[in-house]
Amino acid sequence: MAEIVNLRRARKARDRAAAEAQAAENRIAFGRTKAERKLTEAEAKLEAARLDGHRLGRPDGDEA
Image (cartoon, rainbow, N blue to C red; front, side, top):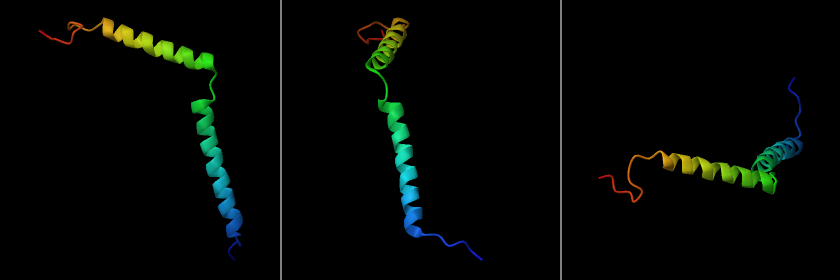
């Protein structure tokens, strides 16, 4: 015989799981300290500067 499932409880459990997954994503995206965000930003700027420093073209964008 099949197991009886309370649809209201199943729906609430599904919604709770979805909310927890969203919360986990938000903790990853927004749960960093100001120092960590500044460090990441500084690393990105440094990497961009290094990449620009290795360009062969002229800085004004003219490739002639």
